[in-house]
Length: 331
Image (tube, rainbow, N blue to C red; front, side):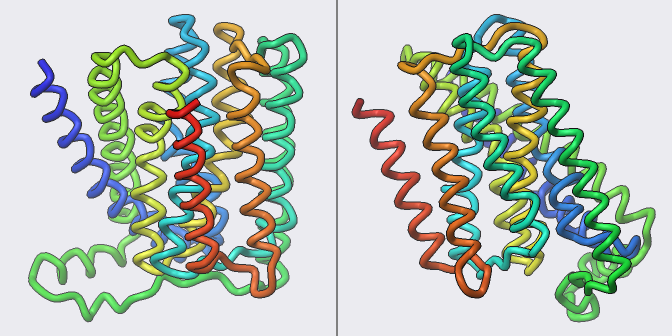
């Protein structure tokens, strides 16, 4: 049984890696052809797609009355997304943070993180009406996101271009792939197939990792904050790292910020419709405060001169992530 779960875990990882590669290529290509900012693509399509495992796991956990896994998955994923994934991505390449992120997206993430703590402590749970508030605020955020994006386009703000010359690809298969990547329908297929592989691979990997972890009698809170959180964040991890390596830095950054906003407003909000998500000062407050602290750290580093995450910032994030995990397993 254990051997089967290990095989499923490896298969899930393979699907994640290749699916993310195609997903990034397709998303960047569609952004260029449709004159849509890659930042907005990262904040919406890529972010929503790579957050699908979090949505599936949290809703399923809520239906099964496993509130600790549901809320732990959301909070743990947000911590992992910023401290681990952006930290690793920043070590690969400097990640510029766009004006829209500084003025809208990061403030929205801070509001979301604060709301999660406030609504959770008020009643010691996220109930269905708390979920309605989160989803409503999310709708307002989306409205301003697309309005500002259209304003930037009208003002003539330059759109990021995917880097790399397709003609430099070597080999027949790569040359064919480069030619086909100029066709809109093929880019859409890449997005859909890549998304399916990312979501399917992430779900497969999470299920396998969860089964392995449960063999050791780990609590649902720790499972949610670690195995499930990291597992459901693997699409974001692979997508952002691949995007950073390809030079698609707007997608790398937008993917993480958008995923975190989506996780709190939509994943936690929708999950609370099915079952109240228990939130206590003893069990969840520290974790939620770490998630808020991670968002504040990201904003502070992004607000520095140059408005970008460099290798030093990435190293600081990774150290904070290691410190948090040390706390989880030693306390």
